[in-house]
Image (spheres, rainbow, N blue to C red):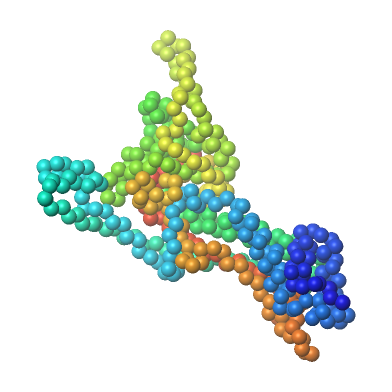
Length: 403
């Protein structure tokens, strides 16, 4: 008598068992106990080396892929991608035409970044390039595995097996997120908060104090101000007044606002407001109110992450916020935040182990009987990713504490 029709039957049964089917759980347990007690030959039940493979192919891999695809990926909105050839640090070169300011050709002046006028039968002017290089760390290898015992099958511990795909997918997404968000934050538990190598007064990336101008900003904004309509506009104005490493104005039209998850609803409410009500006291003491029809001075998208809360520490974790160029690039294509991957290994890699040995009388030992060393079976995920700060253009951050 065969316990399963084929490998697919076993895989389907194990999938149903993990999803909570008591009938399938009992069916598999009966097979394991009968095999253990010598009441049946495993070859009558299933080809031994296919058990863990079928379970993986039909249950773990699809469940992981589905969970991974459904989880949000905020890194695409705040960083650009670079595929590395290996794990070694790489130098990224940035080239800029030597044309600077107004350039004259044949009596006509042209602004920087445009092609000069060429009169009839005159030679084309030649431009060169000046370059800047920056070393960035290569991606790193990350992973986890689940180890479940032979006893877990006997004890019907199906929840531990069933949770692996979702938990592994969530940790993979979180790892990718941490590689980018971690660039902006201190990773030293003793000094939580912003990464001083990226966000500081000296680098011009801390939100500065700004007085009201009654155009974009209608109330005074303190340094490191809490999240508000005026504070966001002050950060956008600060970017517009900054210069890049070449001395050119920084231009960003689309921003992403990174906030703690708890502030995400408030931030979305600010950015979706169709009008802002303002008030002031007139010379005779009357209180006057008006509605400002204009909103935020640029396109801003909100993303929330618990990493700001965790890495910000008790002092600023619930209040800090960071404004960055959307997609990790300014209008002229200068990269800011970078997420790195290994060429050919961009996606997570899932594997299973089935080192069980053979019986003395011959025949392979089923994976549900555990490994040769310690009666375990294992599944694991490997993911290669990393991150780097290429330029600071368009990045403004605030602790939210107003100091």
